[in-house]
Length: 58
Image (cartoon, one colour):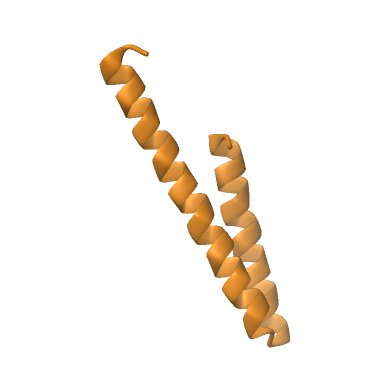
C-alpha cells in the first residue's frame, strides 16, 4: 500500500466515524476509528521503511 493510500484510509475512516456519530451508529464509528488507526500504522511503516532505505542505500 502506498503512502497516499494510507492517507486515504485515514480520511475515509474519519468520514465513516463522523457519519456513524451523526446517525448514532456505534459500529460504524468503531469501524471508522479502526480504518484511521490502520491508515496511520501503514503511514508510519512507510516512513520507517523510507528511513531504512535512505540509511542503507537500498
